[in-house]
Length: 386
Length: 82
Image 1 (cartoon, chains in turn purple, cyan):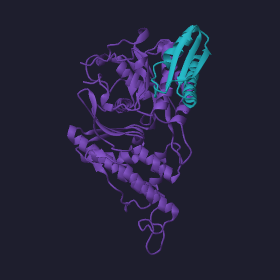
Image 2 (spheres, one colour):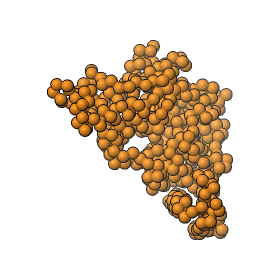
Image 3 (tube, each protein chain N blue to C red):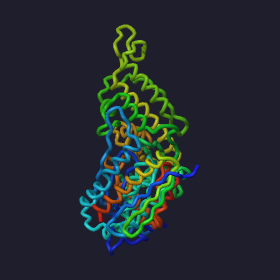
Image 4 (cartoon, chains in turn cyan, yellow):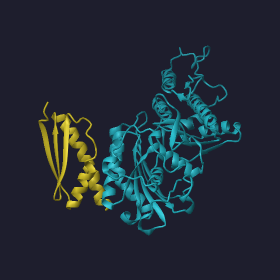
């Protein structure tokens, strides 16, 4: 039996408060979340309904110039520059005056992610923990996304599609683990979109994927879809070939290579395809692949709920396509969140970390706080679910 | 090859507790290439003493600058958040 109230909140309070620090990629996020002590949590699986209150959720994104990606060293420097300022701001917004007394736990991202940025953040987390005498919890980034998605949408036991710049996984819960049903064999979907945005030299603000989505909306020829490689491999996906293919098309278009008859009309020599058409085709193709493996995972575990999490999850076209598939399958539902919770943030780390803490799992020795670039979703023992 | 290149840093903090916290924060992280680079942290009163030993001056410089960057975060957190 799961008892989420086994560890009492500090200072005789009727609620838990957690600070969450996230910095596994180019977003630095700090959030404060509050869980009230609720009677039903003593006996049963109610981890999707913690009645959590978000006290603050601040984020600063390291944006690189158009055509450039973010490198680990520069991203780490960004996080080092902003980390303490952001923690201060998040605490102020949450109305926390005495962190030593008012916080139950400090949660940080242990992995997966880029090593140097993760390390920048954990140094600040350890310092705060020792200054305030507040315990630490190391959180798996993917589990953070899943738990935040469940809490916001109240999806009890969904198939989870986790799509971001670094990860592409289809996940379902079984026997105390989030099991990976399918995943990318090479690059993540967000990485594929980001890199195509670099080829197009479009802005990285607010995010490359968002700008591709906007361009795709302006596609004038949505009924004649440009054909791209479709690379579903069983339950897995491959995306590097698609990227190479569409990159070449874009380069031919920019170079005005009239020999490419896929792009230029045989008779008039005019371009048949625009940048908008390329963006539209890329999105349709990639998302169709995601929908296919998600549907198959739903059939495997007999579920009719899908939860989409991760940065790419705010793409409305992806949500729409998933919705269509779910409606065709016996009234299924799609759960998704908006950019505040889809895109990496500190609140999700605080929330998932607090679940862990309430089950008695926190750092006993600082040697357990070493961050790791590789940390698979199914390595985490999910104590807070039946 | 022996670790012939070395550097010792003494970083003063305001209190012995702060220096001890700095040691605890910096110590857990493993060195990526332990054969080429070694670092040791101790607190002596309110001073943080860091001893670096390395295979060549380039590796030494990179390692030292990375530690100094981490120390900056520790100091900033102490100034702003305690």
